[in-house]
Image (cartoon, rainbow, N blue to C red; front, top):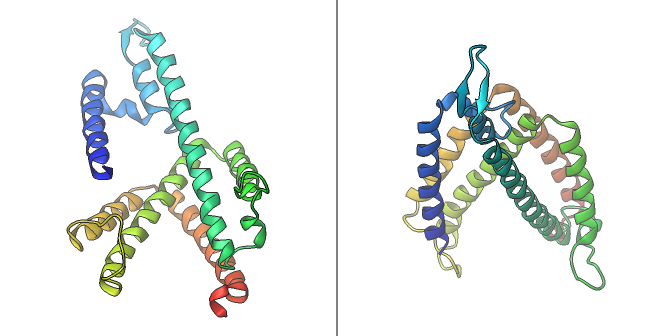
Length: 221
């Protein structure tokens, strides 16, 4: 089911890219500061006046795409924040993060304090950091996580071959190697400034992680 859904999404993305690059030049997808490139591309669909200005042929389509983008962003952000709070919950239970991240709501049994902390931090970050920078940093974090997951699959397959696996990655180690290489290539395709910010944030996170976890980790027991 997972692989089938990924295959369907991949085909849809290819078809969409084929149609859009047939409508406007691919350079139009750079957008404005890298934000909402498809909406910018749709704006370029129209008649060019004598002054060089473009009169959009489908202004309603532009607005519809913007609403769809906002809806898509909102759903992705919601799911990522909920997932991140659960990751922090597990880490806090292992003593790698402060206990506040593992506190559960007495009624709903969710890590509500972690949700609120992430809500404030991510909201403030999005409010004061340029959209293209925040987007690139998010891409870096996601791709780097995929790299670690790909490498982890290979290591676990070799170190713990008898582990129960509800879902088993096919063609190991070919698939993990290709996944890690492709994600690394996409990471280093980001601009140098974004990479500097990302590695600085990662270094800071590792320092906090190891300094706190070294003293409080339950693995020490």
